[in-house]
Length: 124
Image (cartoon, rainbow, N blue to C red; front, top):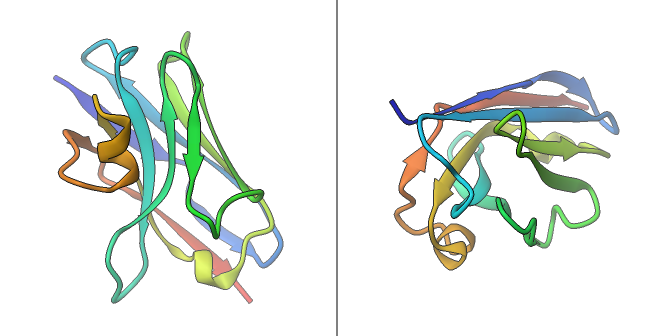
């Protein structure tokens, strides 16, 4: 069974850091682009970051550039999102996702595979 399982969410104070993980299983993801997305209460799901599994090429939403870093561990088959300098507006459910198209991930259009999400709450 192909699965993406997120973990690492929780409660953190403004200015703090968290590292989210996404364990990928059930297939080889070397030809995929992995993405991080988030959905805050009452808002649409938005793109956070994308990373090509094989070559590590990345793209970030403007508001996350310099604060968030996506990475992959090929041995552990895991995607990470390191989040620093967190703000209350970063509070959301964070999802990992996968698609064969880098553009599809960046444009957040009908991605092939999604995880269930992990909640991040940033207190002021």
